[in-house]
Image 1 (tube, one colour):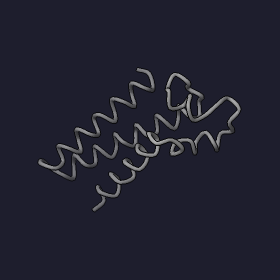
Image 2 (cartoon, one colour; image 1 turned 30 degrees about the horizontal axis):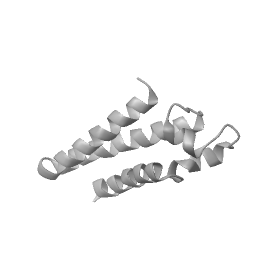
Image 3 (cartoon, rainbow, N blue to C red; image 1 turned 90 degrees about the vertical axis):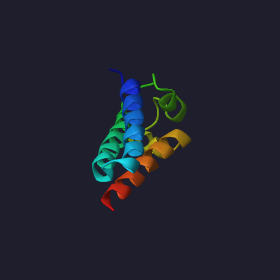
Amino acid sequence: MEAAQLGTVALWAATVAAGVSVFYRPKVFLRVAVALAALATVVLAVALLRHDFSLAYVARTTSLATPWPYRLSALWGGMEGSMLFYTAMLLGVGARG
């Protein structure tokens, strides 16, 4: 499975798990959503660090000349990456409470 597919599947599964947590066993499904959103975030971060230009987000926010700290910070440099990063963080905070 490619990075784009893995990240997309993880993000959709996190969305479903978060939705299910509203109605059934909130702690369990919210923790599952946190893990899946974190997986999607890590997949995007690894794609940024490896110059995986098959992802449009990586191609738009980085180049081959970009040093690694700036490639990693590109995770929240664009709108899609920011939303993914903040969603994973908010799910983590929600699961703790």
